[in-house]
Length: 452
Image 1 (cartoon, rainbow, N blue to C red):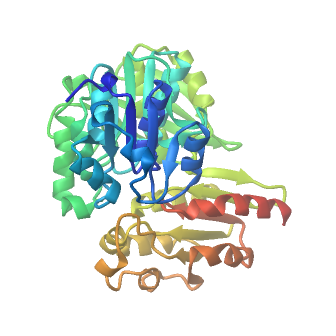
Image 2 (cartoon, rainbow, N blue to C red):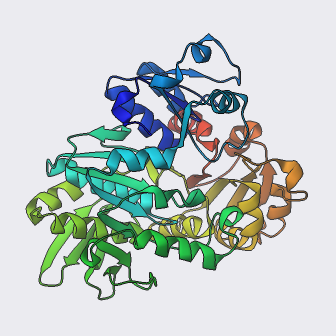
Image 3 (tube, rainbow, N blue to C red):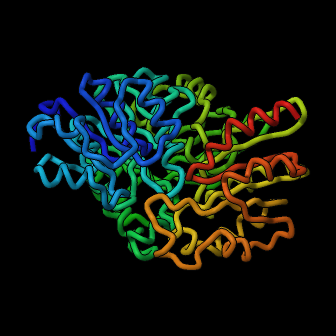
């Protein structure tokens, strides 16, 4: 195919996806004409349009598409979209059509690429690595799977020597990358619609790890078998790089960080959870290996504000606490609820959860039920289908999942009814959690809690 620089127009099929939007912002910032389609108008697509990107929400072949010439247009699509008239048009008219991951690989192949993979933790870790690079003023660009609270974006350009990318295991997309450095945070079973079973997803991660040229530039959470030599990292147990002595003081988390040759005491930040200290540990390990001094890293860790919808926490004068999180796998939900219960053991927790995908709900139903049963009260929303159809998953519904939850105080709800139900509940902490469109509840909830 031609060099990416030769294309003047970039059409994104599924532009509202978090990974797709980062690429769209990259080409837009490069002075190219960027336009695209998505089926849902969200906060993210609205932001893209405000930045000057043209987006449509109907699957129609209009003049904006027919005026494009295949010689200077690259079409980028996400594998989550299976059938679409617009995509058919581009294929039938012999446009160059590439998957998102392939294009990301092409952009980053001439950089020193730091790729962060894992079924959990990759968004926080890649965002934190990017933040540390920015605070150290390294020449880098980043393509993230979440909105950084520090950058207010999922894309940042600060040079081209390094690139930081979130390496997505869905559809084996991460095998399109050419990582010079890599992290594997976790290899839990997920995306079984693609991989079939846990052994195949583990094999996918081993194939990804094999792409890294140097053993010392591959960092794997201790306990994961990755099939080659690598550096390990951990929390509260010895590894090549590890953190310990975790303690909390006035909503700040303190920890000590150990390299193979030295100990640096008293890192401090406001991001809760042992799993997040684990993410910080590997981010610090990489930046240390890039030659950044620990004084810089300490300051950078301290001013890291996190990622939107990753344990986004609000305190109110009336004593209420509201937490919003993107968790959509039982392991992630366990981590969030356990963190809340650890820090606020005596407070009543109301959880509002929106399952994401019929297939994931089916495959991990018992795990979801077990993790959600740790709440004090539960409102379970209808399953967000994304790319799937209910007719292909007969009997897999929120009510079916709710029966498995052992709580006494539990009920099912539509998204449209959820806000009114929340207002009727007695709680100290409200947790909204899920990867679908549950985020539409966020602004109304914030406004309402302020007034009660």
